[in-house]
Amino acid sequence: MRYSLKQLQAIVEISRQGFHVSKAAIKLNTSQSVISKHLKSLEDTLTRKIFIRTGKRLSGLTPEGEKILHHAERVLQDISSIEKIGQEASTLERETLSLATTPTLAHYLLTSTVKKFTLRHPNVHLRIQVEESYKAIDAVRLGQCDFAIAPIGLEPPGNLATDILLEWTRLLIGTPDCPLFTTSEITLEMISTEPIIAFETPTVSLRETFDRHGLSPNYAVTTSNPDVMKTYAANGLGVAIVATPTFDPERDRPLVSRDVSHLFPNVKIASVHRMDDYSTLARRTFLDYLKASLAE
Image (cartoon, rainbow, N blue to C red; front, top):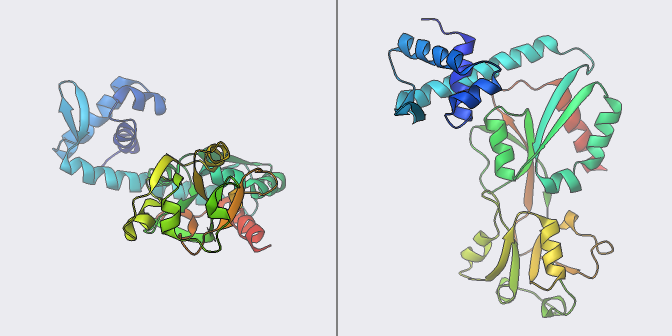
């Protein structure tokens, strides 16, 4: 049996586009009829249905389709890696490096590295995709970008290679009139009595810390943006627990802070890429710059 690259591209893109053949055709710069032809010919060759059909629409993957999609994605990724090996020279030239990261990391961690990389390698097009942490990691898993720099939870993302770059400690921030900033000692129980502006994403949450101690704090607001947390805290909505580098005592007045690294786990920041993906010179260089800046 022989399968064409266009057939594999068709089923992968249909899945990525929520089973909309028309959207897949647009992404592949072809027509809907051509995509449908590729799908039919592949299913005829396999004598198996890849997609579940509801009327004339595709609505999901069959069990066989799930397995076929997994291998098709891997084949396309391998082809992409082979192409990158063939294109890579000893210097960085005419290459696109795609990075997914979060708004917080783009702002508070990567600015100097991005500046250094783009100045030293002007021929490399650095494309930064800003997403929530779980979406940034999914973008890597789906092959939509080369790698991600994102916070990860207690469990590393499955089927992806991770390299822990650093860990951020936590600060409690709020207005000076809050009693939590004047006591000699502070506990989780004391924090749980105040309204809390909590950081939360599908992969990173502070709820687990309170849950482990049997506490039920008053969550006034939950968000994944530290700048929003600081704004709400400054307006008296409650106290917030933020990553230490996101707070500056001068810039963020009138807010005050208190170290709570002994109460909450550190934020682990990792570089994430597919295990079967070829590591380009551009990616290695970018990460070398980032690690060098962290070591300063």
